[in-house]
Image (cartoon, rainbow, N blue to C red; front, side, top):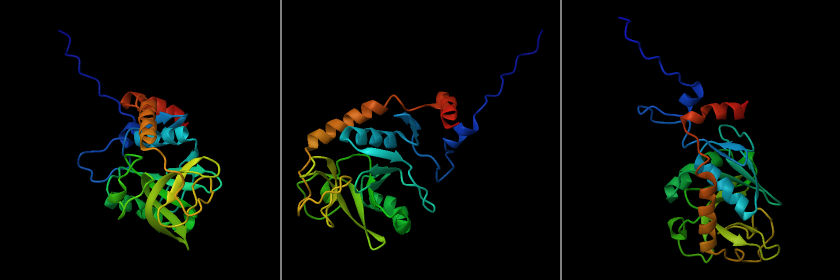
Length: 225
């Protein structure tokens, strides 16, 4: 009788190994599923979802725009007053502050305001600050002031002058980003919450089938060549 055929060892791409984490590891170099959107491979579906939302809002963005010492911001939103964006799995004030720490360490190098966003574009204002706001909250916003960030809630607003949608700091200047227009003592026109929710659902639909599993590692390698 012929000897029993032994199973061949399964080949595993080195790239696939870098995208997964051993259960014994405490820290990871990748969090999330690599996702293709608008011709760009994002490190996670959450990043891709935010990019899709930026498109729906009408913002021009650049992914991983600069290399600061030990830190690469996720996005630059382009405009007359550009703003950097960091994406994280944030839902509480402690998580937003933790995510903003690398930005604090490189504030002078970044030389741009920095917005930290989390798992939703609508954050309860009371979870970040005392009081209330008529404008919906998008995340934790650091406005650059004297080489350091002054952090507070970042609010959605629509520009009184040009009609563009943007973000304004809840405690510093009344300048809307990225258009740069001053809102004359206000946070801009409040953006309807239901509209933001609808855009976020659409952004999720635009990216949910673009996430890749292990069978798509070859496609990632080809895209990165």
